[in-house]
Image (cartoon, rainbow, N blue to C red; front, side):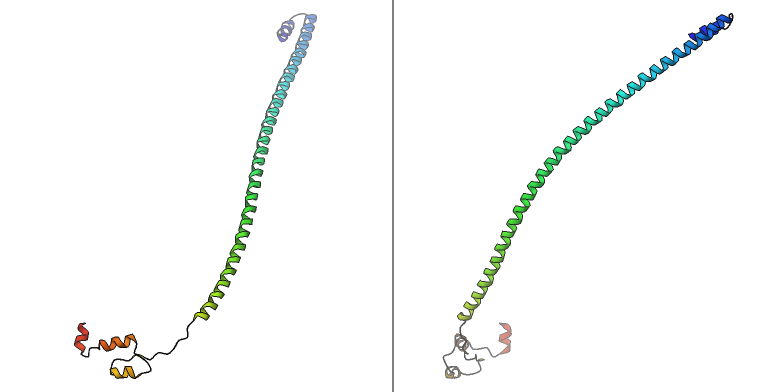
Length: 170
């Protein structure tokens, strides 16, 4: 508006022209003042917005850190539980290993005792008379060092067939 007044004053007398210049300068100064106020207001609004954003980010970061701390606590508890189970399992494995070693020792002792028992239980083997082929007579069997065996008596009761065709048929 001051620029319109200044232009209108430019067509007047010298003092009116000077007054128009003064109005133009005053208008420019007033416009500059309003511009600086607008800049300050915008800057303050942006700083307030940045501050609010920073607070929101800090709150979000705080909540995430709190969640991570809780998660870390849960993981530490789980890790401690697993360590105790591992220690228990290792102890059980050691006990079982000792039992297995003891059982292996017992097995070796029992095998040694069994071998001793078998050595003492073994009977002395006596040579018996040999089997005859059936080509001899009954007197040959009874003349040997003792009585004939059951197999020899059965051979006497059932003499072998001498003809080849009968053997093939049977």
